[in-house]
Length: 361
Image (tube, rainbow, N blue to C red):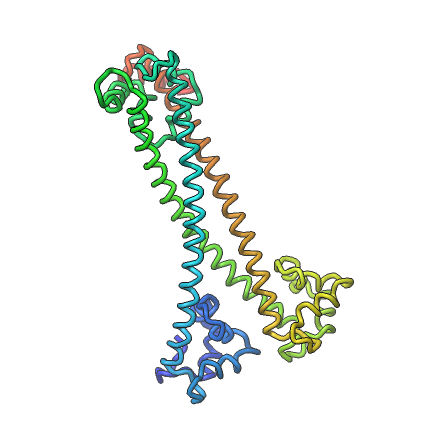
């Protein structure tokens, strides 16, 4: 894309043209992981970046020099992905452990709620009574993940479900048979959580990458807006002028996540902020000092975004669970309303009558 003349090397004018006009090139460089390649997007860093890339001093970037930079970028991106994957796996393991403990506790509680005579086994009569009247039992079975346990809620499937669960053919479900069914249910739930987590992580990763690219682009634009004399450094005068008159600069600094950059907006904190940002103590902020502060701000904003993603995921899961319970509960009520002879099956006549006259159905 950059090598327009197919010479096998990249000239300065080819790079300059591409980073100005080719969106694919810009999008790749923004997220490539190699700072020198990323600096090709910044006019004031372009010459320095080219000197860094052009290791043979030919004045152009050949394919070997390009590949070397790409390998550095890939190594950094892979390291970041590995760190993120390890963090996610630790978090997932902790979440699954907590979920498993809660799920097994709820399963044992439901068994005891159904076992009204405390015999240690569940009879058909006890199950039938519980799935009709006990909301906590119903809610657990609806979302438990084992079809045979869920079929206990369906009159027409009850006998088959009991037969599948009653592995010793005693006519009742004992604690060991219940635990075996719960173990199957838990495996299904954990697998469901794994799939949902992978889907969410893919979406979250894409959101963070897009945010990072947008944030860094806004940071570069902000620097250029403040740097009125195009010197590549920011003086106190330029900063004071911009934070008092340029809305785009103010909006970025307010939300950048880095306290010292945000304090540039507060006259009483300006001197202290400049001193903290100006690590070379030359009285101005150069691009490297600016970038260091931006990296800290980006890390904080990404952390905030990850917290927000987690909050959204928990809220969505709670909403989905509540909706599922309500929907399936309504479905069971409708079945019972149509099944006027309590046979456990719906005849054509029962269905036709209900859909004509029963508003809830």
